[in-house]
Image (cartoon, rainbow, N blue to C red):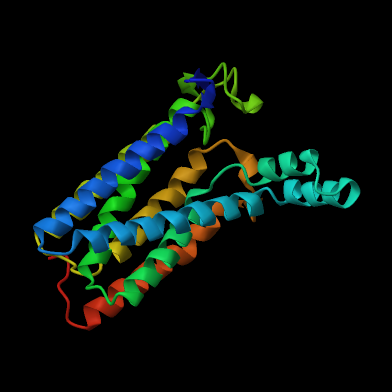
Length: 264
């Protein structure tokens, strides 16, 4: 919807701008909530920063794995032409995007390292669970405006005319990005309500993994960008959703067996 634009001699895309706004909004929210709970907001900020680094690395790595033929092509160029500009350009193409699930797993890994290293209380995980869907909501709006992650062809939807992905142009497509943005916003408000009521203390992250994985599995059927990879009729994200859902359920059950509060 909004093609890349020039500003001060630089080219900017709308998605990075929305993602940056989402990072600021979720970070400020989580740090303010930590302070309200009498926690050290510096620890909250560091936890989020560690998670952000992991998200950048994980999202980029999974993007490269999903586009593995492009990675192979890049290294074929390396073997033939050496460390050339052509190789660097092809490598940037292969790893020049991000997959949310890769970012989520990378963020959980790096954030978990900081969480364990500092022996933080579980409430920090709850606040992290609130920050993720809030950030993701902004990101999906950016996807819609930028034209990536487009939906299936349908009679009701939007038509891209300047999408950098040629396949997406000229066809009315379902705005699955906006639907997922609303879904993430709903998750945020649900988790925040539970947090304020003191429900599922220390397990909101597990609940988020359960709910988002189930929702994402269904939303994938409305996606039209088949280049993300399919196996056994399922997309890469659907294959990742299944173990994440099971892991989330496992953490919820473990927490309940230890006598923690339930939803009711």
